[in-house]
Length: 251
Ligand code: 13P
Image (cartoon, rainbow, N blue to C red; front, side, top):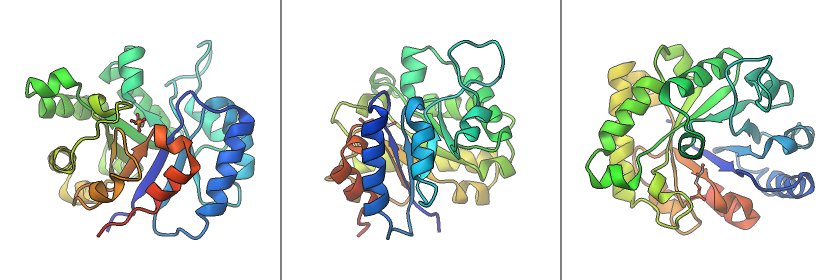
């Protein structure tokens, strides 16, 4: 069985003090939870203080992005420096990076490889826009993003990678994909991973859903066979909401 992951992507929110308060609340209130992996991705400025706070907690600290090189790249952050500051994972290919910062699949592939090579786990994000869905291009778009984004990876590398399916039209809109829409996409993704790698790799890979995940829709999503967790944006900023999501009920 795949251990579920509930990950909070705090995006560009929270001062250091606010981040510490939220992380301490989560640490205290989720300490009994041992069958779900909890990941939080605060802004870069909060990583070091949070790493110090979370040393005695299983909560995994993740970066929200990285650059696939080191040196003269003003304003960027490398996987090695994320590790150095206490991150064990990094989000790569988020739709906000793809859409607002024009990140392309081959660049995302370089980041995935660099992050894995540096010893980080990767949460690799994919998802179609509303126009693409309306034009029946969803599977085509997901396939391209996966084929290119995961190009050159082998099954061993895949043990440290989690896929996050985040339909762009569901992010921050309050319009979650239906349980059926999400399951259909996840099932397609798992089938493709089976083709590209092998069946056991596909069965072992966690596939998270992201896009307006809230306390009132998490249980239905987690009930789906191929949904192994959630990547949560807005609701991860509110302690009560995130805790309820982390304590989802599958039945
Ligand atoms: P929302 O949960 O705010 O829709 O954001 C989802 C997301 O982008 C997580 O990475």
